[in-house]
Image 1 (cartoon, rainbow, N blue to C red):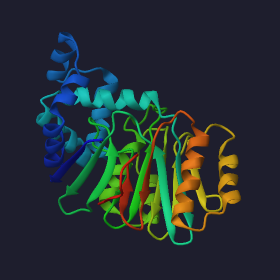
Image 2 (cartoon, helix red, strand yellow; image 1 turned 90 degrees about the vertical axis):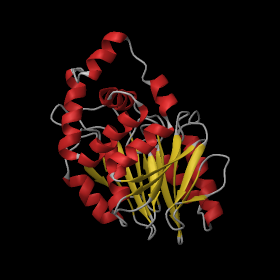
Image 3 (tube, rainbow, N blue to C red; image 1 turned 60 degrees about the vertical axis):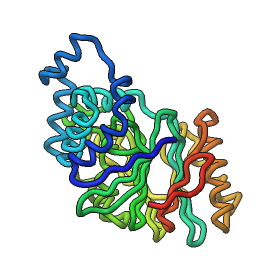
Length: 292
């Protein structure tokens, strides 16, 4: 899995990402002549234009990040926005699981084949290490230098009022917060499209989630020492019982229980990634721990 490094103001962060991934982005966003011409003149479809409007209003730093990304890669900004919208429309069939045992905390998820690792050093904000997709400003999961983990389950947009997906909160939280509660307040109080879910964990062992599938975002707290989001219907209780039965007491036992739960929830999800907010590090599949 490739790793890129981004540093500076939002447009600089995006430009670094675009330059590093130029060939991948050009190939992935390839379109016909008519589409390229429309995107170049900012004449994309109405849904994509609405998404751009909401990013500029409610996620201005990420809007600037995507502008820099487009320039660095030599692609149209509307192409990046369309890719974001389409990826959310496909959703994710891989659950998010966070668990704790004593002082140990771990968060885990599956890894899409096209993922990359990204080290971000935003100007005046917290550094982070995250798992993202080449065309994204935000991330699927990440940990920052002060021990906050944020993760998202992308899902189809369900609201006509707001078009920006809730997964954008992952980037906001990693840059701004060190504890779950203020990050949670941020996510619950700001506008985003319905659909998807967010998971938050910190180095003190606090766990919380936001379920965006209903008319209003809903706070989700852990059952016992595990929090599971995105599991198949009716499976969350069984996975929670898996943790209760195993009663992990060490970090190694906790990781084993978490990986077993991920495999049970989604047998086809492939290799899993783990995050440790206490040590501020992340472990990709078949790799060593990487510090922020």
